[in-house]
Amino acid sequence: MAIKRMKNIPIEDRPREKLCLKGKEALSDQELLAVLLGKGTKRHDVLALAQKLIAVIDRKGIDVAIDDLIDFDGVGKAKAALILASFEFVRRRIKKDGITFEKPSDIVPLLRHYADRKQEHFLCVSLNGANEILNTRVVTIGLADRSHVHPREVFADVLVDRGSAVILAHNHPAGSLEPSEEDIAVTKRISQAGQILGIAVLDHIVFNQREYLSFVERGVPIL
Image (cartoon, rainbow, N blue to C red):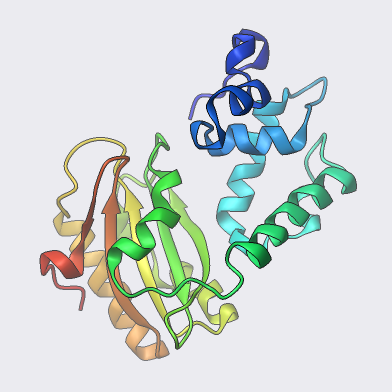
């Protein structure tokens, strides 16, 4: 994704001003994080810094920690603490009782913010035995061939979560949502590995900014 430079953005389109004028829904993930950061450094403006942090947060999900953030130039303990505190506040207040997956449409809102990414993001949503969502993580970014997504990359953190099931997903920045032969093959391979581990693959969802396709709803085999 191209990084916008703050000095090149009209004042009304800068993150804080844009939020006030157009509402929080109008901001990208990068812009929302930039609001939390407040300012950048001499080397990186706030939007560039936010973009670097997003890659870490995507990978770690809700397990992101202070040490994951303070390695970046311009992020000290105060900014890292503000980011983590905001995450935890939302988790407690907004998602206090967990989100239960019953049908594909339940999971799509949690994925939709990845739809504007310029590269394909292969995602894994982990769930417990009650089908409550534990975490959402980015497994790989920008692979031209998803057959290179290895089951160990998918399940490594799910085992740490003590997850009982997963939902796979990936965004399509452009083109049809119809699953390719590679999509189907990698889904079956991950499902077979999951059977050995006792972790079920419940669905694979392909999505863009407007719509989604569920393997289960479409009747595409996942095992």
